[in-house]
Length: 382
Image (cartoon, rainbow, N blue to C red; front, side, top):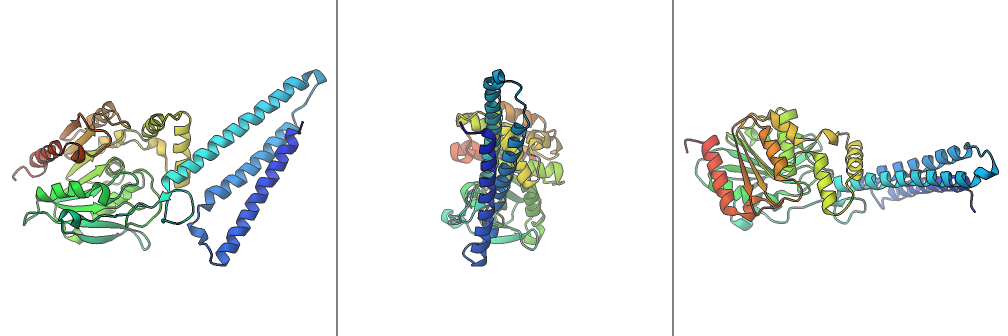
C-alpha cells in the first residue's frame, strides 16, 4: 500500500511543477504575441495551483508528525489518517470548485476568447426594430471605463421627465429595456437605457450582482444634465438592477424623484440559495462559499448585500412589481422589502408572473399600474 505521506509530497511537487510550467508557457506565448496574457483568467488558476501545492506539503507534514504508539493501533490509526486525508481533500475540492464557479459567474469574456466565464452579452437588437428613434451615448466613468446608453425621446412634444433604466444580471439594454422604454415614451417620458459595466456596449468584464453596479447607477443619473434630459428623474431596475438602485440610494446618496423596482431580491445569500435549490444542488455550504469567494475576488462583502436593508433609505415614491410564481424570490420576501420603504409606495403582484418582467406577462396590468403610479406620485397635474 502506498504511503499517504509520500503520495502527498509527490502531489505537491507535481502541482508545483504544473504551476511553474503554466507560468513559463504563458510568458512564452505572450512574448510571441500568440495570446494576450492579461485577457486570460490566470489569477484564480495560479492561486489555486499554489494553494493546492502548499496544502499537500502541509498535510504531509501533519501526517509525518502523527505518532503511532503500538502495532495494535496501526489499523485505527490508518483509518484516522485516511479520514483526515479525505476531509482535507473534500474541503479543498469544495473551495476550489466554488472559487472557480464564483469566478465564472461574475466574469465575462469576449466571444471566442479562451477562459472562464460566459461570453460577454451583446446588444443584438435596436429600438428601431420597434419604430423608436434613438441616439447612442458613451457616458465616461474614468479614462478607461464607460457606460453605453441609448436615449429614446418621449412621444410627446414636451417630456414630462426622464426614466433611467437598468437591466438584470448578465442582461443588456436591448433584451430587457426596450419594451419598458416604449411604454415610458408613450406616457410622455424620455428614457435612458443603460448597459452596466461588463455587458453590452459598456466597458469591463465583471459583474458583482448589484454591489459595484450601484456606482454605475449614480454615474448614469449624474450624466443627465450633460444630455439635457429633463427632471423629474425616475430610476427603473429589473432584478439585479433593482438591487443596484437600492444600493445606490443607501450607500451612494442617490436621490431620484421616483423609483420603480421589478423582481427585486431581498438578500443576496437567499437569492443564491434559492437558485441552488431550484437546480437540486445542496445550498449549504455551497451558497456561503460562493458568496465568500466572489467577495474575495471582487473586494466586496456579499453577505451584507441586502436590498431589504437598503430599502429603509428610500425617501421617494416607489413602485414595486413582483410575480406570484417567481422561483427565485418569494412574495413574502418582497413584501418584507416593501414594508421597509417609508415613502409613498405601491405594490403590484402579478398572479401568473414568474421571474419575468410584467410587461411580457400581463401588459395591461403593467401599463395600468405604471400610468397610475406616475400620475399619482410623479406628475399629478398631467
